[in-house]
Length: 215
Image (tube, rainbow, N blue to C red):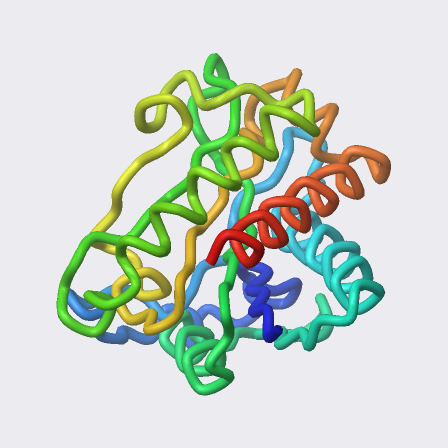
């Protein structure tokens, strides 16, 4: 099986505003190529979190015999643009893909949110499968992590988005997971923990296996 992993943002994005502020077409409207992402109040960046979880997940999946396609292989570069990330995963013909993020929500809000695509043409054939995968991710997060469903985004940890290139342009089953809220003190304490990052990777791996086993 081929698994696509997109660790959101990149470590040097904030140092290259001209690049990341370039406008791209996300399938619905123009948006910037990328952003620097958010960070905790103590400066732990989302880009670092995303990459660490992605590498833990990659190791788990390789151990299980999967082929893994990454949209970036370090946390000291820039980009690629969100459209480029979608192209990498689409070209790979991944059986399933996950975009890994952490949110910069209201400090009073907690929890994970699973962002799912809505039909817009390119992604029409993978909407149902993406919804199934989203349910599998929610099941795994509730079973294997201490992170609750979001109190401020979506319903029961699920929200539908039509403004993100990675979801609008996907031709493979895919969701985007906001693994928690970096601006919330309780969530942030979990998100910076290596053990918790490994736990998130385990949960995502379990969701991927569940999805593929039932496919």
